Image (tube, rainbow, N blue to C red; front, side, top):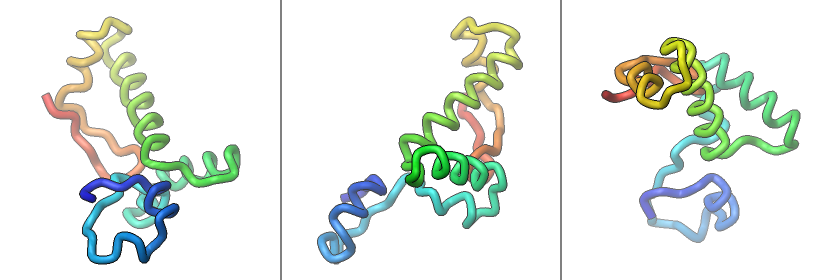
Length: 103
């Protein structure tokens, strides 16, 4: 079980996967663990609005939308190829530590 969602991990409980190694892509505790103020703000705002913590899918959607918006602003257009070029090689820090978009 190499990839778990936080929801699945919580639902099956700690005993069910005993002896099975897996990973969660992102969970709401990550920003606090790596000292990401922006990530902690996202978690707090999400929890206040939805009365639950965000999952990896929510964090990914938030990150991608912010990255795409910033890339469109850098490119000066919404044209797809130009935005992709603005993403390539760009380094950002959103909900965790520094990340770089590959070319």
